[in-house]
Image 1 (tube, rainbow, N blue to C red):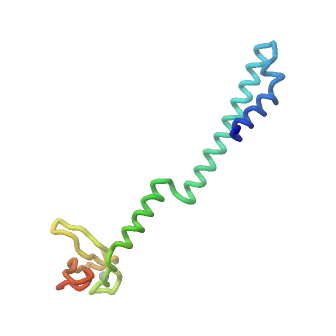
Image 2 (cartoon, helix red, strand yellow; image 1 turned 30 degrees about the horizontal axis):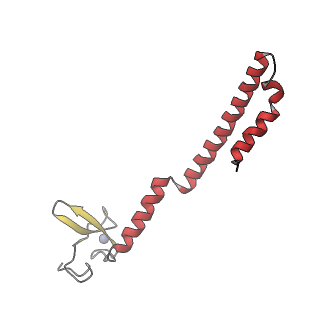
Image 3 (cartoon, rainbow, N blue to C red; image 1 turned 180 degrees about the vertical axis):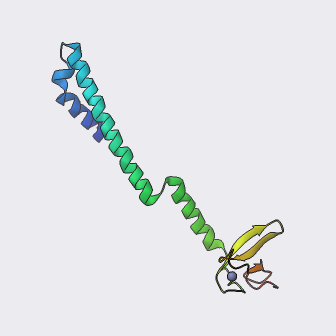
Length: 125
Ligand SMILES: [Zn+2]
């Protein structure tokens, strides 16, 4: 089985055969330069298409990280609400250990200790 790109290369070889096989070395060299120029244009188009795809869907590592974060989020107990403003809280870390901090930080300084409660929510505040 011949790959599509190999078929394309063979078709190009046939297309430029008259010049590539010319007795005049300058004609053959010009044909090669022309083919190289066409290959560079194809590469440029591919790189532009990849850049566009990257803009729209992100890179491989970015998509892997998103998957991991999504999975990690599912493992977490549901976040409690902020005792000061009612917004959902986020898991934060400090030198003293993890705690719940308000997602409205820095406007809201609400916090809760990581709970001793059954789901991590009902700690002794
Ligand atoms: Zn708050």
